[in-house]
Picture 1 (cartoon, rainbow, N blue to C red):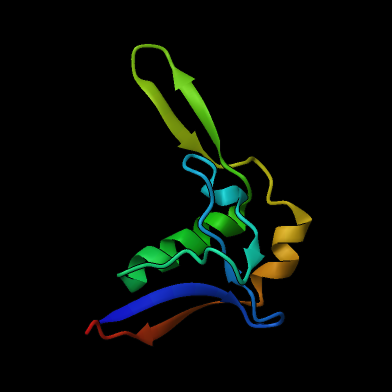
Picture 2: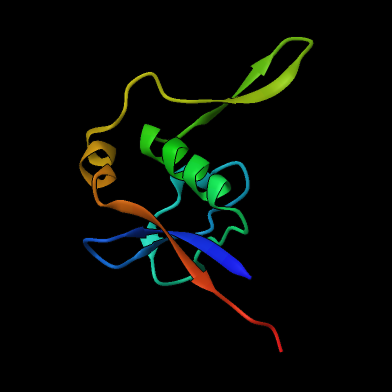
Length: 93
């Protein structure tokens, strides 16, 4: 079975599995790595993380939904070029 993660190839750290509704606020470390079972899910997460911290907006009568920031933060622009989706094979015994 293949699993995927997002790695900063410059530092060797992986994207953490952040708190619910705050995953685009997650940092990179070697603890609590966020794992994906599909490459497309990891790629989508990477693209969302690059945009910056998303916020929850409330719409009258429609509930709430995530919304990206209006401007991409400089720190995300600088780190984005070093991010990569990596894969690994695992086997359960």
